[in-house]
Figure (cartoon, rainbow, N blue to C red):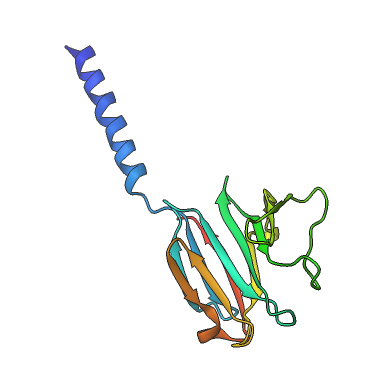
Length: 158
C-alpha cells in the first residue's frame, strides 16, 4: 500500500512542477530611460526575439537589427540593410554570414553576438530618422515619445 502512495505522490509532485513551470512568469524585454522610467515591457516566453528598426540619419535607409534571448543571454542575431557601403555599416568576415536578403539588400545572418553587460543602449532617432521596436506583430514608435533620448533594452528574468 505504501509503495502505491509513493507513486501517487511522485505523480502529483511532477504535475505540480509542470504546472508551475507553465505558469511561472518568463523573461521580459524592458525598455527604459536613463532615469529608469519604463517605456515598454514585453513578455518573451513564447517569442524570445525582437527587432530594432532604425533609419540611418545620413543615407536615409532603414536598417533592421534582430535580437534574441537565448541561453540566458541577449544576442544580436541578424542585421538586414539595403546597403553596406554606408558609414558604420558593413560586414566583418567571421562575424555572421553575409547573404542576399532577397530584396536587393544584405542580410548578415547568424551573428549571435552577446550584448556586453546584458543590456543594449540606443539613441532614439528623430522624425527624420525614426527608431521603431518590433515584437511579433506589435510595433512601438520610440521616436514619437523619446526622440533624441537614450533608451536601455534589457531582459529581466523573474
